[in-house]
Length: 499
Image (cartoon, rainbow, N blue to C red):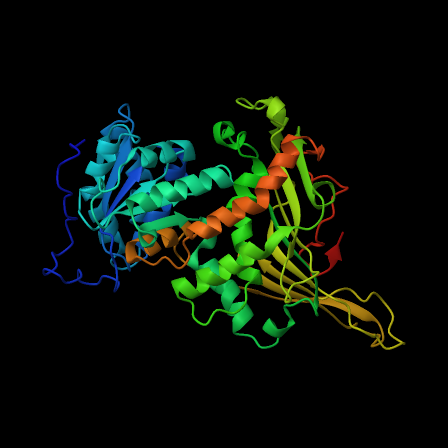
């Protein structure tokens, strides 16, 4: 463990750059050389952030990183080194050319600093470890992050410091606005990364490429042709020991507000002139400002909580009986909202977003259901099923379900699916997030206004639920959720729809 004011050691394999010149092999425009992870001993760092960094370095296209872990005083150097060995070290053998050296160098140069993450003097000192080239990544509970940032005074952080915040961004619209104000007192908006690993480059660019590079798709994505849009993100994971966070958040805050509204915006936005930061984020903001709940809370929002059940060989206890859960909070583990978009392109097309935990079948996809043809010639038999476009969010896939003439009887309609795997990155989503931070690329960072708009959409729902205006339904763990809820037609993998 080293003192907080010691200079950051250069990674052993990195050649020093000439004054004013980028380091050899660096990406043009790269700003960050030193990454400070506040909360390096936490669950987010262990499960997602450090493995993401490891995948980025192992890919062989990123220079060694000056990595500084920051943790509470009880965390030890031995524990920190063990975590690096478990995450970064495990990637060395399978790394691509140059990746193994980058991993080893980063591990060797990494160091741990302990202290209080809410102390302004400490945060200021961390920002000055590599003045002008340091990013502070707040891998901490949102309340701790907000407390630390609000304690800082303008001018305390070293000039050029980049602040990286993990979602959820705030707890409601008021706290998000308050946090935005606190951030922009300290650094300009161009130095703030509100990261969302769902917005990894490969995911977003797959959606953009599919929409804007195909003449037969883009002109059809509008109210004249689309019946409805559904975004479903159901996981077989249960609480998994995260009651301390999840029981105060719930599915609507944790998934729909934090991630899926952003995905919806990329699907529904008008074509940007370029894929640069300003153009793309302007389009996202336009969609979010135009979204609202489609009807009353009783008819357009749903909430439920799982009860005891089985998922495969796992016995899942009743959510209300999980350690750390307060049943009186009525925290939902599945949420669904139906939205409408106030513009001519999507007027009248319902957009339904659903996310739940502890379901029997993992389902992560966007489903665009097209309207039926205006007239089907008499003489066809069989079922005229809707044309559906499915975009898988994990794994990333594309499937187009259409009706064709059946085998043996050309008058019989049959269902087929044209499917393919979309390109995916060798780098994990959090690695892509870190790559954007290092390069100073804000394109897929959530802009402050967009973060507040997401809360504007869901806050009235949360308030209605707190008043018990919408019943808290139940579903057994291992099922697909309450049977009475409307939801997009699922797919059994054969291309044949099932209810």
